[in-house]
Amino acid sequence: EYTEEVTNKIVDFLMIVPDGVQYMSKDIKDLVQTSLNNGVLEEKDGKLNLTIALRSAVKSSLYEFINKINALGSVMNLSIRKSNEYPAWEYEKDSKVREIAMNTYKELTGKEATISAIHAGLECGLLKKILPNADMISYGPNLYDVHSVNEKISIKSVENMWKFTIKLLENLK
Image (cartoon, rainbow, N blue to C red; front, side, top):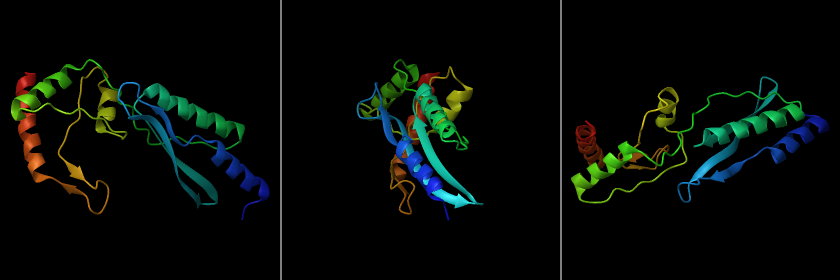
């Protein structure tokens, strides 16, 4: 059971803490750049914990919101703990690998490749953190109903990605 003071502090924090889309990409139309999701509020071991999932393709924006949450916690005398940070992977306007991949795709299929971006944590962010000068792209087969019990993969697209990868590696030599 919570006192009125504690209840008010919880409500105040939830009303003030950033949530939802904060910034859109300046490089890619309609792409979310930075967002927060105040996802899970639970009581555990006599403590109330709020899990906030923070994502950003831009490192400075990621830290802007980490600092905002820390400042809010400090002002409200709350304990804030950061864990499981997923590094940003920023869009690079000049990517030789992307250009070679686009040409390879056209060479294989006769069609122009479509470049798209998603607002999600990708392994490229982890790799970019340890290989900051690497030029990289992300691609893969067609997936459906991802992260659900109905998740599926197109076997034909796996075959197409295999052929593309082999040709791309040849063209990158």
